[in-house]
Image (cartoon, rainbow, N blue to C red):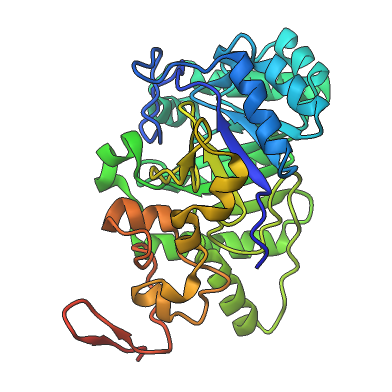
Length: 363
């Protein structure tokens, strides 16, 4: 595998106008101890990235539209040859914002939608009117010819909404729909009892396979669900057919499950370079090291690319190279990012040694 940075999420602010139940960074209206970096520093970071690679860069948060200079950052990134995108909750989108997006070279925008009704979405986002904000933003994007995708996060409180959110995202005119299975970081740690069970996880991913098999107009992909790539191979073999999968625009191509620290990373507002948005262990800090040095020499990144040293069922799994298990979920729930994916029910063909000296066999 060629470990090149293809996609970088860049937290340009920790501030947010919502207080979502699952927020990876526990963002709020004010961000004590995590101030926005200056525009000068932002340009330096863009130059540092561009001197090494030409990834997609997603301006994220928090809520990036709270930064007054966010479109200056986007325009500068575009000017030096980076493909600039944005992730927003939609609440602040209007006609003026759409013009600034287009003028600054923003290629595609992601909107967050976690329910097919205001009741469900607003509950998840802890803000009355949040659902209406997404609907309004989608309408503005359609009117202004701005491509957008829908990101949807699910727990037990809204998992029954999955097929309805899929249908709504499609009807809104989105280019793609990403179904996120949340990783309990940030405020997500406060809702551990709401994590979708292993059994339901498997059912949902099989539902997605059946849906994706017949979906030829709308791009879809489960996210933070690496074992979907196992299910695709298992079901294709079981059904005696090969499912044709398409690459999403401005993505990593969807060739493998967990690609944290392998093809993607996140740079947070403090300059920490993290394997992904949900993995709160820094590989280094871009204020003290070059991005190239961190990407190529970080001990953390080297560990995550060393598949043969993965532990438990992941380390023994015949699907390791296409799945890899969610490293962020392993770290969040097991305290060890090399441990097995805690929300996968697959038993590998090869026997697995347990921590207490026992053995797990595939019956």
